[in-house]
Image (cartoon, rainbow, N blue to C red; front, side, top):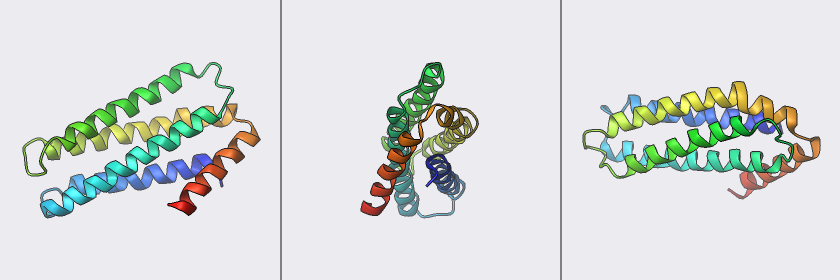
Amino acid sequence: MDVFEFLLTNEAHLAHRLNKTAAHYADWTQDRVFEETKRVLEGLNGNFKKENAVISTITDIDGMEDIIAEAEMHRNEMRADAENLCMIHVDEPGFEQGLQILADKFERHREFCAKTLFPRLREHAEPEELESIADQLDAVILDG
């Protein structure tokens, strides 16, 4: 398994679901919007854990500190946005906008991962590290 392709595919799926939920906010029932939002937020949290697992497994990150810090900043901002979204009832003003803001930020994060973070991590990763990460992800997929 190509770890980075797996993560990019996972991110694309999450982005699609997040954008679809935001786009259908007005047509779907509140229950459906709530359930979809809850699933997507759980997916984002899982994705962020996978990104962290990849970063922490690769030992040679010299020169990548700024890139890794930027990715962490993105994740922290999106976690805060997700927490704020959880504090608003689905039918209150601000929920739809909060959902769209989160979708936009995640889209920017995806682009950053695809063009900057993942290519640089791939350059720095040892084959054994990538194999270890792939094994960890396989275990998560099989257990989940």
